Each structure stands twice: as structure tokens, then as C-alpha cells.
Length: 123
Image (cartoon, rainbow, N blue to C red):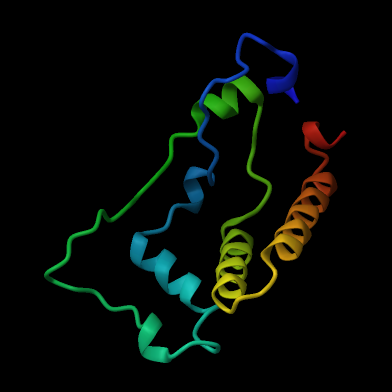
């Protein structure tokens, strides 16, 4: 809402992501996401292993301070809910389901969660 009303910041770039206490390693994230896929795909397709030969940053993190301070933005979902939404979306995508309908459903669910928390943009 503030982006729409304040032309000084309209068009600015912002990062939106989890609170810092919700940080997870890349390996934890992949393992958690794979819980939503394993039952519908070949198990070996989503097998998660640590490799000595492949280097990935241990922690990937967005700096969301600008959105927090300029927009008073806060995340709507906790880590587990975010992983559930993301995992279910990709699962349905790879199963060939109608993503327009499912995406709209998830957006409506997200808005209901935000409304329950009485976030400023839902008022």
C-alpha cells in the first residue's frame, strides 16, 4: 500500500524474506522441501545427500531491513508454513496440475493468514 501511495519509493527494489531467527542451512531447506515431494516421485530423484565434491554456501540470506524499515513489512508465515506452501506449489507444478487455480488459492490463503495477524496492509 505504501509503495502505491508514496511516489518517492515507488519502483524501489526490496527484498522480502524470513526473519533472521528462521534461518536454515541450504541442506535443511532441501530436506524440508523434499518431504512434500517424496511420496509422488521416484525416491532417488529427490534423495538428499551431502557431497564432499560440491560446494554450496552454508547459509543463503536476504537482507530485508529496507522493507522492514521503509514499509514496516513483516513476514506473514513462519518457516514451516512457507516450506509447506512452496513444497506443495512445486509438487503440483511437476505433477502437471492447473497452477493458475492453485496459485490463486495460495494467494487467498496467504491473505487470510495476514488478515488474522491484522497486518497494516490488510486493514
